[in-house]
Length: 341
Image (cartoon, rainbow, N blue to C red; front, side, top):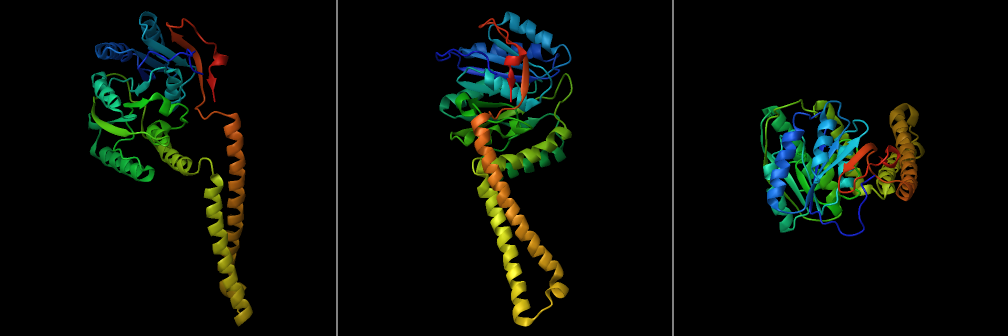
């Protein structure tokens, strides 16, 4: 659940959303860097730190920062819910016209934010940071990342070269309501662009991590492959699953029927012992026909689920906010009011 938002238009132009997890050595210098950069820009802003269930001193440090800086909004999640859920909580709390996301480990340089701002002011709706220097990347990782980004660009039709970086900027109304779960934070530009808009990239450098450990290893990258399949399906068949399953079922049933008719014609016209000569093919035809009917039925069930889901539920990652600190509202929201599905 987002923080209380006034009915009047917000004067805040930029919301910086920073998800953090066990970054006690980095949050203080990051706050100083953000304050210096955003203060120099001379526009209204807010920095939203989302503590994703940290178990070190990160929560207490962020509370101290939020207690003395009116531009800081602190959202604390009750447990470690993952980066996608943390970003969803940050987006829900953001009130700026534009939202800029960055990591909390100091590998993203706050001094590069004005380059994102310049592109947004030019009229772009999504600005993606393209990593050109990655201090800790080996050549096999570089090759794998380039292939994954090329494949993703081809499948999605979104012409960018780096989907994995967390340094991005968006027009807020474009990402409002974007579903975030699993590892979908990588695919936000794809889902946001379904609503239209202009996208571009800016080159950014990735500094070597100085403190703490990386939270994103191979175990976190594997689910991304499945999320890619999910998003590909959602982009084309989100509101019409019967078109996908029905088409597949139709071709399966038709193929099975054609094979079955061919076998039947051989039996009738030539007296062929179908079971002896073409037994496996006959069973294969039967499997195709049954599979086609099942796929069509699955598509119908999907249509029913889509109608019910859009009527009742909201597509957001599940997370629980235990505390939301915003000095401008001087309020803390109880846990039961902060559960999103």
